Image (cartoon, rainbow, N blue to C red; front, top):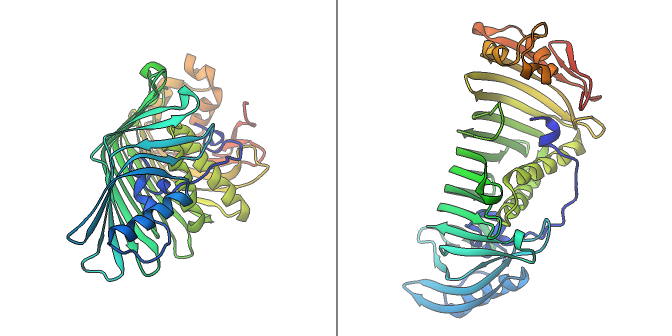
Length: 401
């Protein structure tokens, strides 16, 4: 994987963000009520007026099936709910029946309403082209929004889904994940899931992951911090980063800019875009925001494990507009398992067939020097002109070399 893969050339995307983006996969209707409006009343007529106004403002249509009030709770049931998802290749709508919305006062917090959303087991993504359509399956998908009735603004929400999956009806490519948990607060976002899988046409497996978690939150100066981890990653290829632990600090990206980027990415994922494309979209947006200030992205702690190989390190990468890979910077690594790599790749004097196919990997491996506690130490330098140096030795002169 190269930095060019993580940060592809910028392509503007015309996306129409809807309120569903906040909760992300399958739980997104919670955000329908997350917009500023007049103080919430629990009577059916007043609650209905608020919901209808929010739906109209965001082009959401629905048919009210039931409306009741009992024990301080206003409950609505909706059919034929159409939520615009925006576009990355054509307009799409999330369509669902049997959506339930409950509204009540928070018992211990004045001027706060608790809004519970329950989503149905089945839904679909409508699109003009068949290949862009998706059949959705959700198990036990629900969420809770805490809404300040004085300021008419959300104070946070959480959502859970036992299972979320999407199938394209003709090619049968699909993605799914289990145990989705979302917490979306003003000052922190947490996402976690396990047992995810995505495929190509006819369900040809393209990737899988046993578990993943992501936390983003602001630093004291308002810039963005990130904690990420995954376990059990499988993707086609010889080298697979099966376990990753990463702590990073985007010193030039404000938290107020990060949050909308993630909302955009989650909307696109729900619309059926490949998870890898979504990741690249978010990374590309981060790069452009960091570029505006020229401040580095700090890698404060990195750990990678792959087939008896382990690497741990720190680094710093500064975004640059004219840099060959979009960045210049350094990465210091201590590697365990150099002998395993040499068995696969060989040495510059005696490369294996695999090593002969990619000599820079062999040269970089050979540049290692004794590190701490029996490890091999590597200092990777990424130059603006595209040169990559390992411990002072040029192993690549530019992209494609």
